[in-house]
Image 1 (cartoon, rainbow, N blue to C red):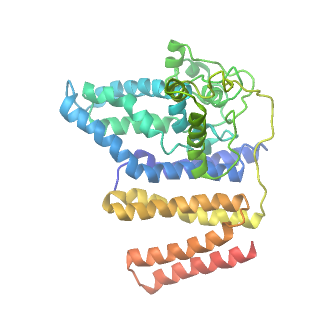
Image 2: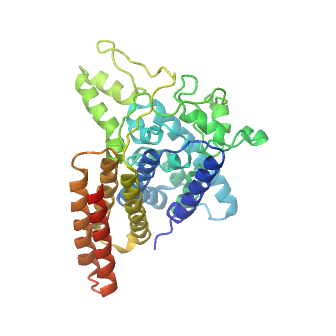
Image 3: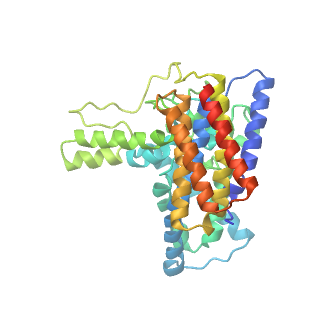
Amino acid sequence: MNFNPIILSIPVFFILIGFELLVDKIHNRSNYRFNDAITNISCGIGEQVTGVFFKLIVVTLYTVLFERYSFFKIPVNWATGIILFVGVDFFYYWFHRYSHVVNLFWGGHVVHHQSEEYNLSVALRQGWFQKFFSFGFYLPLALIGFDPIQFITVASLVTLYQFWIHTKSIDKMGVLELVLNTPSHHRVHHGVNPKYIDKNHAGTLIIWDKMFGTFQVEEEEPIYGITHPINTWDPLSANLHHWKLMYHGLKEMRGTKDKLKYIFMPPGWKPSYIGNSGTLVNAEPYTKFDTSVSNSVNYYVLFQYAITLVGATFFLMNASKLSFADKLIACCAVILSIVNFSSLLESKKYAVIVEVLRILLLCLVLIAYFQFYDIGFLFSISLWATVSGWWLVKI
C-alpha cells in the first residue's frame, strides 16, 4: 500500500466538505453548486490517478539528483524537517508566482482557478500537468541534500495545509494574518478583480508575499474564476483548454521570437500586430456558467460518483502492486467515468449511450480482472448494472 498523506486524507477532505455544507445550510448560504463541486473533485481525482504515472518521473529525477549530485546528505530528524518545511514553502511561492506570470506554466495551474465558486471542493481542483512545471523549482533541495522521502512528506504537508484556506466560512484571523496564509489571504488570490490578480501566492507562510511585493489585503469581496471562463463541467476539457488556446495562439505568431515570447510572457500577451489583450478584465458581476438537469440526473451522477470515488481510492492505495497495463486500464476507467458524468450534467445527446457502454465495459473489466466468480461478487456487479440501467431509462 502506498504511503501518501494526500490519499490518506481523502476521507477527512469529504468530512470537512460535508461540515462546510452543513454550515452553509444553517446560515442559508449558497457557496456550493452540485455541478461545480463535482467538476472540482473530478479534476482532483484525475490529478491523482494520472499522477500514478507522472509523479514517478518527478520523484525519480529528485532521487537521482540527491543520490548522485547532492552537496551534502542532510540527516532526517524533526529539526531538519522544520528547515525543509520552510524551504519547500519558499520554493512553492516562486513556483506559484511564476505559474501566474508565465503563459506556459499557467497552463498547468489555470485549472485550479477555473471554478466560479469558492469552497473547500475548490482545493481539490488541481491541474493534471502542473507537476511537470512545479518539480523543477524544488530540485535545489535535492542538490542541498534533503532526503527524497522526507521531501515528499513535507511537500505533501504544505499541500494539505492549503486545503482549509479555500473557504468563505472563516473570516479574518487577527494576528495569524501577519504570518500565515489564511482563508482571507487566499480568497484574494482567487479573485479576478484587477487589484487581486497575481497576488498572495503563498502556500503556508504569507511572509513571502510581504517580502517580495505581491501581498494584497482582502477588501471588497472577490469575484472568482478566470478571465476567460471555460464554460464546461468536463474535467478533461478543463485541463486541455489552455493548451488548445496556446496551440492556436502560436499559429498566429509570425516568427520564432514572438512564439517564444508568447510562451514565456504573462497569459494574455500578444504582439501588437495581433492585438495585445493584456491580462486585466472587467470584474463587474457577471452570470456564472450553469446548466440545469433533473434531480434524477443529479442523484444518478451522485450515486455513480460515490462508487467511482471508492474505486479510484482503492486503486490509488494499491497502485504500487499493479502492473503498468493494470494501472493504465484503471486510470482510463476513472477518467472515462468522470468525463461522462460531466456529459450527463451538460445533457449531452450521447451521454446516456456512453453511460450504458461504460457500465457494461466496467462489468466485463471487473469480472475479467478479479477472475472472482463468487456468487456474491457476481450478484453485486449484476445489481449495480441493473439499477444503473433502470435509472438511465428513467432519465
